[in-house]
Image (cartoon, rainbow, N blue to C red; front, side):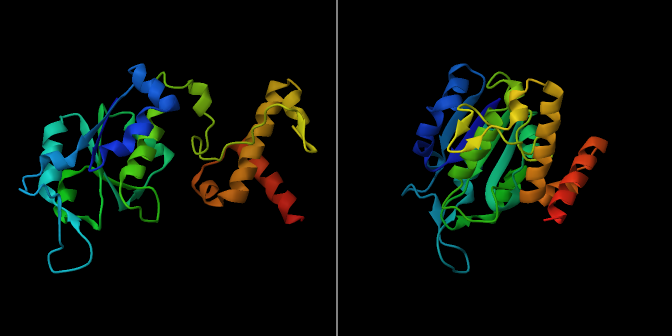
Length: 242
């Protein structure tokens, strides 16, 4: 997996590349991550990469030429180009897993007021982190890259992310570690029982409970099997009695 970020601020990613799991993944060649400075592709004699909007308006827009030329310099037949913009579809875990099928991801970071509309014609997909606006696409690029890199083969153990929130359409079950009791709060006894099947059932039910209470919209989209449906019925009955 190769990830290329087109940005005006490559230094934004310095700590991202040299911290924790991402640093190890890069050092072990599990993934290649590079930043390309879009400003180096400008043909403007003053080194400008932005200009005022045609027709007037506030702010400055990224020009199409530097972005287009930067793309031409790095894009291959196997590249998938993502424009990070509030107008894109909201990033979710199934999308992250789809990105693993590409050999090369190119992420374009917007900045300032926005960008020339013609830039959209050069991309395969538009992606957003959510219904809010950032000063630029760099934070979104880091979030997407982090989500993808951690799923690349050999970066972390597969069993560590199979039960992650959203992997199976549910939020993750509650997790505990030592000490067994702290400030009057005790780890649920079932997790100390050593009975793997009972622990599995408890975790599944609590995963459904968390989803029911915090993200019921996820349950509306998920096709529940018989066991999951039974647990959901029990949970709904519990809360309807309160």
